[in-house]
Image: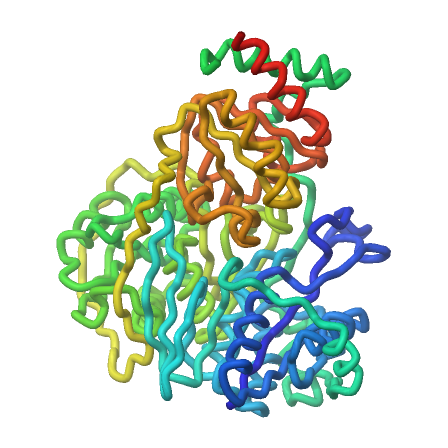
Length: 260
Length: 323
């Protein structure tokens, strides 16, 4: 069995976000990056499938040089090999273009299961996993918080609203988009990190994958015109002063509410 | 130019979802300004009455994808129904609510059409004759304005706009959808497990986020504050994901929706899914190091600072004030 995991490297959750000069994305120089939180849970699901049987885990990421670090981390956690799509045109693609690139890799790799994170912490699009499944001709389920595999199918629980869950059965091959909290994500062991250095990372461009014409900024159907700090309409009354002064003001507010 | 297709959603209890009427509000605004017609589709089994209701309350001419195989949500079946409806309606703008069903099916529909997909919009406007889409990025820290080419499939954030309350004189008609060979199989919906934690009845909720740093800090800092106020503890999603507290404590769209007299949010930045669960609270106090944290948008009173410096003295002062 083979499983494929799609990883995105995103700005660290605590990174300072400044809008770039052209206004269309954030300033990415000199900030820390990490594996998208949702994708760490997807990777963990894949590694558990590996632990449970004989699965090869292939991690795939689209992005510039820095993405190597994310792939090495994944290899250190137990993935077997990596495919790095390093191509500025791929980076400039919209969700559909990136899904086409990943679908081309899925066609080559023929995985039994593709694990993705439900969404990315940067764009919050939650677009690529179902798009990739559609293009790869696979059924899909999103917001997955647990899964049980049988010989030919997987039964998953999807998180709905208010703590409800939907149980869905999918035949393999299929794609699962994992919700955060689905599992406890492991850390890379020192031994794992050492071994990761010897594991293969295959570097490709969109053209190598035969989809060069279909991706890139020119082929994008969705364009981000600008990003900006949300207008502050109903900003809270901000309390200022020393800690003592702030505490006194808070006690006054709480007393007025009659909850003491 | 094409028309607008609204995909209405049916709730577990068999009613048209409120969010579907919010799509109508957006569609009406855009249709009036751009000369597009509005068509709708209702997907399910035995949906005649619901389709008639939707057609008369703003949905306009409404297609019925009515089949026993569509009685429960199924991504394969629903994606085929939406694609067939889009074609029948000659739509270049497809509006779907960003619900667990909506975000599951909408990207598949877009990819099947080789079309643009934009998720979780809080607003869509017509500017200089072009549709522009507004949505949040970076978990609510920044907003983005986008545009799209050709057919565009959009999901809209529930609650972002008022539900349409007018009427329309649309008719209903059956939509043929090929439903052979569906791969995904609906098994069941499981209701939320009953737990001892019912935040909906608490007058005071003291909620902590990732900023607490560890489960021990919840015990040390949050619990005494909750106790002195006679309130309950709550948590944001990352806290529950990390296993610091059980899911029963989670406030937000996938946890509990609360409206206490006092909600104290400490170390919570305010991702949309958390705000949805607590913004109806009577009085909100937010404490966060980041002055740009979205939580301050819904708070009545905010403190930009370190929760570990503020909360212990606050607990002490409240204990003293109680006497």
